[in-house]
Image 1 (cartoon, helix red, strand yellow):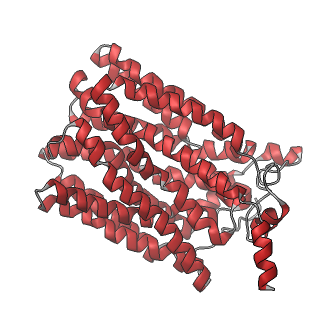
Image 2: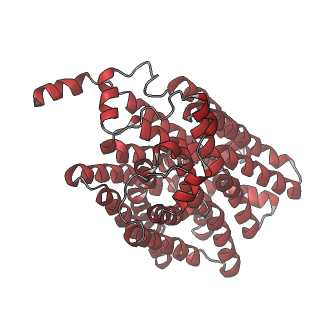
Image 3: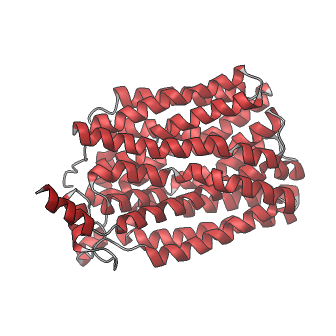
Amino acid sequence: MSAIATATAARRSRVRLLIVTMLFLVTTVNYADRATLSIAGSALSKELHLDPIVMGYVFSAFGWSYVIAQVPGGWLLDRFGSKWVYAVSILIWSAFTAMQGLVGFLAAGTAVIVLFALRLMVGFAEAPSFPANARIVAAWFPGNERGTASAFFNSGQYFATVIFAPLMGWIAHEYGWRHVFYVMGALGIVMGIAWIKTIHDPKDHPGINEAEFDYIKDGGALVDMDAAKDTKASNSGPQWSHIRQLLGNRMMLGVYIGQYCINTLTYFFLTWFPVYLVKERGLTILQAGFVATLPALCGFIGGVLGGVISDTILRRTGSLTMARKIPIVGGMLLSMVIIACNYVDGQALVVGFMALAFFGKGIGALGWAVVSDTSPKEAGGVSGGLFNMFGNLSSITTPIVIGYILAGTGSFNGALVFVGANALVAAIAYLFIVGEIKRVQLKAA
């Protein structure tokens, strides 16, 4: 029997690996586009004479619209499917990214308003991205591979810094900060075209064979999530009662709190971290771009490792709850070492503690695996949208709170304590609020 199983596995196609690779690449570009302002921020703020509080609000602009659009974006995914909603999303956010380079030709006051508006539009356009990632993983991957797949695409947020922070730093240094936006916007448009050519549902993909389809279906993949529906079902879409039930579920509320706190670390890294390196640690923009790659690389390694650890625990214990909670809680506790940066002077030690903190954050960043595990089939997009809405409230609060801390104290010390405290709260949420991790069963309205 084992020989037959081995032979069957050998004949199985591996299209799902192509799918998750595409998710990883799009997520990498997604986060690189979010980080453009942080790389260009020092030069931009100097040229436009912006103080830390104003920069904090500009950094937060993306988050306001991104949060507001999460549930509508999830509804669009459930209504129209992942492929085309995501494709339009990529093309629109890339166009608005490129347009941000034009604000340098405006007067300072007008430039701030236009830049804030463009960042708002990027946030609106990117809103469906991560709920779509979770839906696609749920459709393409069996349960025992879902943690690794989710961790892999989510690790694109760190890989974005590894690849693009040095590139954007070099572009800003050699050609000026405006060209950072032009280059990244153009790259996103290319990625959107590649997405359209590559992504299909499991039932429709020309490269999948019967062995792989049966394998992922039997393993719990929701292969018919975006299959053609009858007109009545398609027009109805997810219901408001689904949202009420998800918000009333203690497990999901604990997951939402945890994701908010985990994303506080993410948005410190995406917004203020390069500024911290330049203003607090005395690096140039070019140096900051390269130095930021080490914590990001450690976050990437931790992200992939966290998924592998989680799926290994699941296979050995059969407990989804243990498999997801152990890496999340352990990773969050490790990431609290970010506070140690306040007590060292050498740049090498600072970068080392940052790298260790983001390695821990990467291990613990399994929230999207939990969403794929727990979202009801009939409302996967809305479930992911709610999760991302709560999680990305930190994209608003983190840059603003840190901006006020800097304005009030003139130092990043309090900011790093704030970030570390959020990591502790995330661990507490998963330990004491979430409870058993299982798929939510919705009741009929």
